[in-house]
Image 1 (cartoon, rainbow, N blue to C red):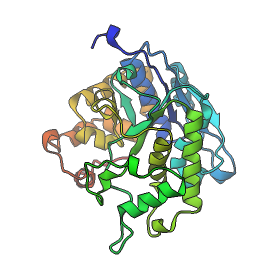
Image 2 (image 1 turned 90 degrees about the vertical axis):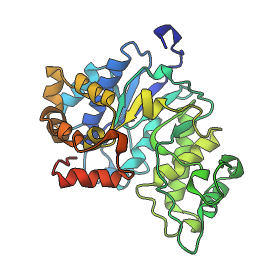
Image 3 (image 1 turned 90 degrees about the horizontal axis):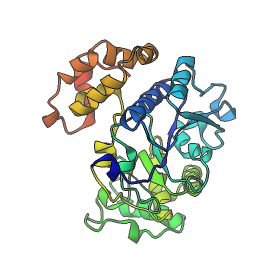
Image 4 (image 1 turned 60 degrees about the vertical axis):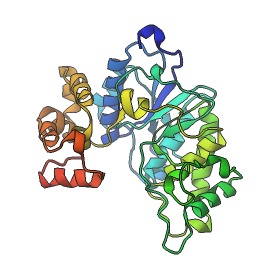
Length: 334
């Protein structure tokens, strides 16, 4: 596809940034956007939680001045927001409350900071009137108990609680009591037409489930899964569902790499080449090496030592097995 073939949709890109790991990951995200789509017309907005009662005396803001300067130099726009529902008790809730920093009626794509952009986001054929999210997930929630309730009863109770049509959310290509039949996403990316409406639904569902879960959820853990429990409901309420495209987000256009040892262990050569190219300039290196996992994995060569442990064409089926192998080799950092 040539540049003239790139569709015009350029959503605002939104991520959460705060002190520690996320600020350094946000720098990688911004660097990768600049490299992959230097003329991208949409903004990269980084939502930064502010100190307040829900942060219990801690300061969640960017803590490294050099990182803040690099982000601004790369064209990122840092917007503050107040944590009114979650904060320190459930940091995953930041991605829900972060939607409040965006203007209404502006198409958006939320990305976790541990994402590399590999190509122009305009290559993705978004239908913003039908919100969707990442299908790069496992059957992590719910975990039905031996004597019930089963998947259908648990998910059905949630749809009933909020007056949503449960039947139309299901994929009839899967059996009734198999987890993939039910709308379930990884919250590593999601998109929609109106961040105000989507954010209001997402927040309403998440807080209601957290504060007063249906009895069918007894015995089910909501930490850290609350965002991924509420997300399908917000998407369905907005008229969306499973994404209509494959191989682009979580593929040719983005890589949700999770943790640096996992990136080197399992991602394809093009991802590693992108990572090492965008982090090579000296002014970038001086900032990123302040973060130990980047310093050790990228600049001290431990990433390639991890990479040598695995055959990308025959990786272990479970992520935990990959982690264990790296730890046995004493190469795990996070």
